[in-house]
Length: 223
Image (cartoon, rainbow, N blue to C red; front, side):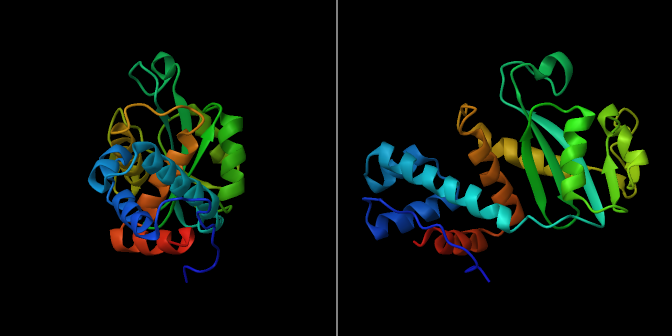
């Protein structure tokens, strides 16, 4: 099942034994510097190997989540980075905008977007979600077009409640919380590298069992 595609890590001077250890440390969320100390190797070598793992994930993960979502789907946008607090408005200054789509009890898909305006989000929605799907959002006005775009649209007003039976976006918000927990330990990520770290979070969420993550990465990386 996991041998559909490969993108082996090449031009690596580290021994296969060290590579296997680093793959395990990566899955266990041991930061590169700590892994270098444990294995007594140069931190730059570890950081480079971790970077290559993320490149592999970013390259191959889309082949696993490229299907068009249907059924019950949750949508939400979130903001990463920046110095100021806050999700929208002035608090979003300097932050990276990420749009997330979650097929309930299944798969999450994320993409970095320029903004959270209606036209921007609807372009992604129409590519990733089948018409007539049941779509859950919060009350952001950018989602207004869903009401007249061939979707069954339900909103949850967070100023009144976070869930009303099946009407909620708790799944995608759970992903945001998990992703920010993973990324927080890096103490800042530059914008150029951020999409790679985002796909790492997506990978960890979609394949939640550590043994499964390791099995997949061993195959993908050829390690």
